[in-house]
Amino acid sequence: MNRSLRGTYALIDLKRYLNNLNIARKLSKSYITPVIKANGYGHGAIELARFTLEHSDIRIFCVATFEEGVKLRYGIGESAEIIVLGFVDEYFFNEVITNNLLINIYDDEIAFRFNKYLEKKRLKYPVSIKIDTGMNRLGFDVSINFIEFREKYPNLVPKVLMSHLSSPDSDLDYTSLQIDRFSSVAERAKKIFPYIKTSLFNSPALLSFENSFDYSRPGILTYGFVKSDHDIGIKPVMKIFSKIIHVKSLDKNESVGYNRTYITGKKTILGVLPIGYADGYNRLLSNRGFVYVDGYKCPIVGRICMDMTMIDISDLPEGKWGKEVEILGDNIRADEMAKMCNTISYEILTSISPRIPRIYEGMNG
Image (cartoon, rainbow, N blue to C red; front, side):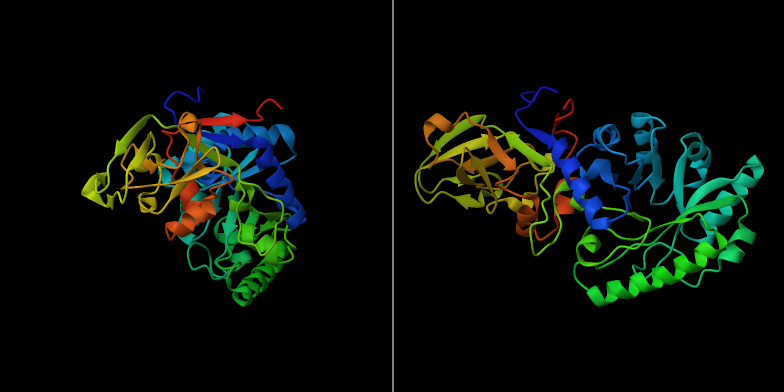
């Protein structure tokens, strides 16, 4: 991929990703099943999975949708198990089997429909069972009767039992309650399905609780972000760079961009960057965000446009106008950007559109 194709590109550091995976594994003290949904949180699911398969013993990945599962299967072949965490329509059950995907069974309706499909095909097929321990999103109630489940859905072979923690980085008491609930359900499940694997902990849970389950599902931590009071050694995997494609000199009291939201208070030199909100550069950064050019902090002025952004380069020496512009990276982290936009780092990363080319560093090393 040519990083000068458009002037804006994302650099994905695969060695940092592997480092973060190893840290997640140490914290988990168990097997990890990395979450690479939403195209690997915007980083590129197939590329991350291929690199992980080549450089580690990880052989299970989690995605959110059927389509993500199919794309990943085409990208990595049969070298790993793929768990689809979300909804799969019955019209795609045949493709689930064809692509060897493990789907989440989270209520009686989907259990009935998938079992009926398998019955007609005279197949037994492995599944994951989702339990709702307090997230109140997807999952069977904690009172689930596994003997009845086996009798009603004999063609489903439970391979994984999972739940999801809602607040491990904000409510430790509630998280402890969820862990206790899941432990109780897991104990009952293993009596009926002795080989079932248990999975509960997400990224923030790994920092505050002792994991006793078979798998953990780290997501945001593997991309270099997690709420923590101390440095655990993870590093952001994605950096985004752009360049100044046009320079404009303005007098005092001139307006910049749509709706004239910025008025120059003095003579100003503007730089125009080829990145905008269609690329996932959040419009809420207008008149409050900043970029770095060779160590110089340059504020965003005016509203971020669909395809372009204006920055104040008045303090930037002319000899540096041709230097790369850091949009996201070591100087401007996704969590810092998220605070300015009143959101979370997850949204910042997953919003980066495919229009920004991804270049993978460390692919051959």
